[in-house]
Length: 412
Image (cartoon, rainbow, N blue to C red; front, side, top):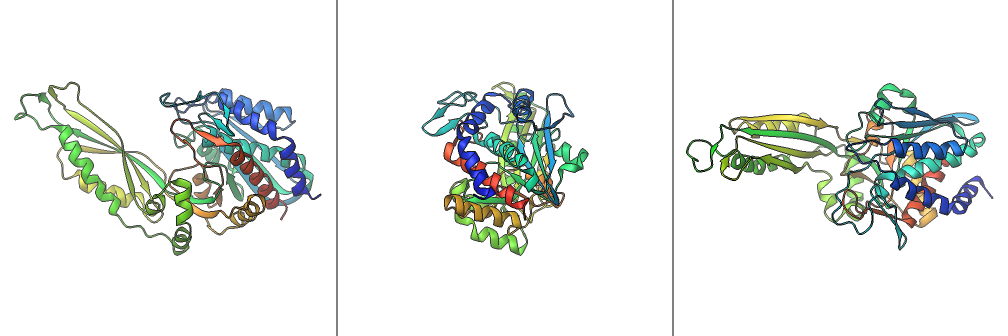
């Protein structure tokens, strides 16, 4: 029996342990905000310690610990980095059929906040590191595990901190298990641009509409005008255009019908609108918060220039940039893509295609350092909503895929 077959056999022997690890991981609450991941990080640390695996905790902020582990193979070679995040979305309790922090196993599905986003993928990274650590004398190069906090809020205390202050985590390639759908491999992602616009006025009694304009009415008109930014054309590289055209059907399967149509476009979501104190008062201030997603081939300055032009049509409107991450991509036909595709076909008869994702991941941060970074994870079932879950079959498939793909990368 070859080493790859041995690894797959070990996963099968440990099937129940792998499942129970994820269920226990979900029970360690780590919503962000507020972002305290200490209990969940300790859960991972205890498992690594029990396996005799050395790791270090890097916590630029006490409640945001990051776990990093590294080993060298017996021969020189390339450096592969595994990345997953510990923090998860907060929970709106409405609509859940199962305890969001319970890790319930029902009809072949594990339920709970973080089940697919992304404690299943992070678990795959942890088990990949564990299995390959056992056979490190047969590997070339280096393997690094990064379990980070603070991904849900752009990562200033998580992966971004590690890449800025611990350059040893950069590596030659990154593999991440964010929810993607097993029929796709994400080689790039759109860039979130979050902005706020405030409309201001003097305010007045609600009956005295002749004395002051309604800033909420103006805000409504402004929101409608902001749709103009979705017409900004994109100019991505030719190889990206080809990859996206070939992947359109897979994109719709992974992210919902219509997703392929908006991958190459600027999109606008008005996430929050607040204004006014009382029904019979003309409000003096209304704030709009917008989530704009930049496709490959559109930069922030172009969009902000257009937003500024729209805002200038109105008096007393101020514009604020809350946060931004540029769109990112790497080679859609890179070596890790070929490895993942071959293993998916061998293990499950799946032929995943390279795509660009709508949502953001920490993988972008490695791409900013010109490091190819790929995402292969379970389906995004209930992600950010109620009854988030992962199927046992998807979860175990992702574990197998990460283990054997990392093994092949470190033995070539």
